[in-house]
Length: 104
Image 1 (cartoon, rainbow, N blue to C red):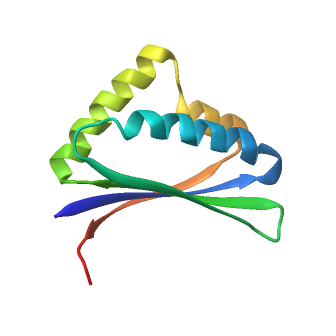
Image 2: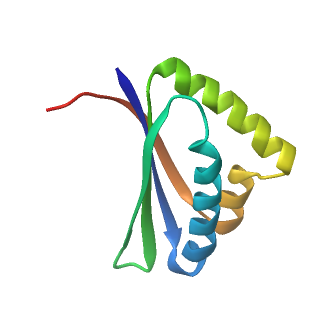
Image 3: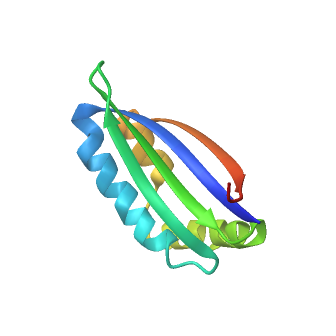
């Protein structure tokens, strides 16, 4: 059964462009991993000057997702890419959840 990782971010409009550049950079790495099925980035502007960004990553299995997490963390470390540090600097709030996916 496929596993979906869904992250929801809230970022100030003034930091949204930079944040989205980092999101797309990391997505280019994520999608190269074995077991990756598909992923999307969704965004919408909120009335309070913030932007809501949702990312989804669909994995063929739980084990594929876990292996990808390890290899992605290692690659990020080797190139000095620090998503938690970037989010802290930009004031990004995040919620993460994993879901199982099946057709209707």
